[in-house]
Length: 253
Ligand SMILES: C[S@@+](CC[C@H](N)C(=O)[O-])C[C@H]1O[C@@H](n2cnc3c(N)ncnc32)[C@H](O)[C@@H]1O
Image (cartoon, rainbow, N blue to C red):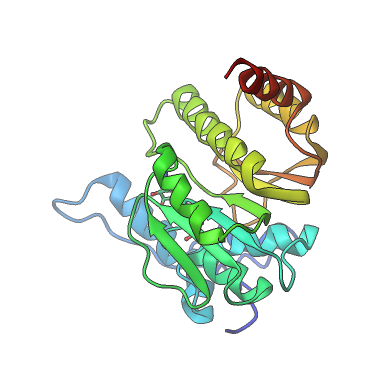
């Protein structure tokens, strides 16, 4: 698989700024009868997006692969032998990146949608909100702990910013609960967020169980979107309160 280097398609000649966000669109798409304006805009953006072109060229399943590549370029957490869980893995770009950096047999994923097989990764179709589906992910780990838990999940957009934010926070909380079950000490938790009011509380929660919590907006993430990624590293274990609650539960049973 070729090294990624998205190229500008625009001809503005501006230097600086991320390669995925040239303002000078090269291909214009005319509106057509029966096609909504929003679809025309989407098509135009796709046709002019250097990350879409780079994904085709490099053999990645989609432009999302570059978000993980760019986060990893900065933080260098994907390394040979690391075991990775990818929550919300379809169509499989992050799986491809993780398998490439960490090695075959080290990557497991889950998605609501079917994922075409990815060399070196094991995937199940399921819903992270269903404990029995997460049990199946745990089974794929075969008793081993994970070094990295990733989530690029988002529920389908409602178009209402606050609702979308709260829905992704709920998915992150499920991912974090799962991370508490499978993550090895020192592990990484890298998740997508749509930024909003509940983010501060989430980051506080993460700071209780990870050494470092960063918020990253990789260049491949569109500048007009509230999307960003939280990368928490140096896992220390579940927060003290959760540990105390578990001890209470055990003594009551
Ligand atoms: C942006 S896509 C992931 C792209 C992926 N990182 C890649 O590189 O191909 C988000 C995915 O999250 C999945 N998803 C959303 N909610 C989910 C849930 N409750 N359980 C499992 N997957 C979920 C969606 O089906 C979708 O495929």
